[in-house]
Image 1 (cartoon, rainbow, N blue to C red):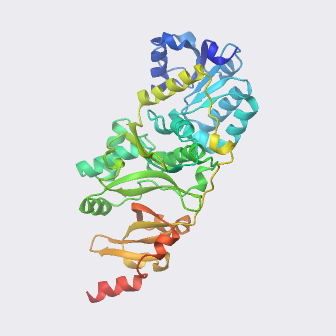
Image 2: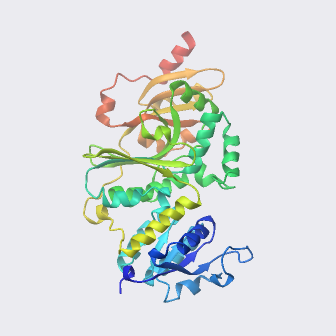
Image 3: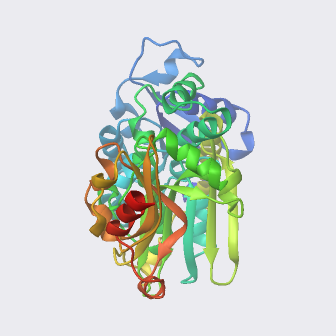
Length: 423
């Protein structure tokens, strides 16, 4: 009997905000024909809003129970989660997860386990919580016409940037507020350093382009290096600063992919994505641009995505990884250019040869900045992360070789210095 014809007997790992919310929703959703059989928790001393006999601290109780046919994994330990998911898939149990770190760091192994055991592993909640972006990429954009994906995929950093822009808060004050509101962890490094966002980009790449990558292969940064003067510059230009994960197919057919702060104009749909919300723009050769918007942080949006995956299991749904398995897999490339804004403490701090062209510069007693074009490979070293330097992409930042060659002749740092000295 296939899983869609059965009662879904769930073994749940984790009973935090998402797990408890899911438990309550399932009690009220008889039509789904699903119920939680057992819950594995780490801290049995905590008070739970469910019967005590439902809980155990022994993972094997769930993994070895033949009546449990679905495992839902909602814990924050990626290594423990990999063990749980691996065991479940090998046992023929379908798995639903919200753990993007687990999936991003173990993607090749998880793809192999799904194929070997012919068992579904769904993780819509692992990307943008309430936004069904993975399933749309997998099903609606299962052809070779996808041009690009650009998104705000981390609600915590977007909340911080919104408070800086709208309330004039310092980074430290905005971070503290995000923590107080429950949008950022006490140790916020995963969010503010762009790690969470690049984990999510890894998931998007495999469904958008069939690219199997590891987060460490992708250039990424967060918002922790931004300077107060960057916000002043953005306001003067009428830009919003957003942390953007993006992938774009170039003329060569190869894909540019990275996570970096970016100036966003009013014409971009991401401009009005505020607070803890996420937004994703998908561009296709035929359908032009489509915009997905929804809450990207919080227990209920995540529980909503988990519930959607459970419902999909009723219909025998599983990811087919169509791009990867049909020969349409693209390849990542470093051979392109970016138009960037770089701010720093003094002009001699940045080596002029890093720039192909310098288009604009400012210098005052508070901060120096340059707007120019760099080859993407230059970002593989850490010059833009050191010595109180910050880097933000300009709007429409990605440039190909032909576009750069069509620009005016190169300006170097010598021109900048002459302007500063003799102006």
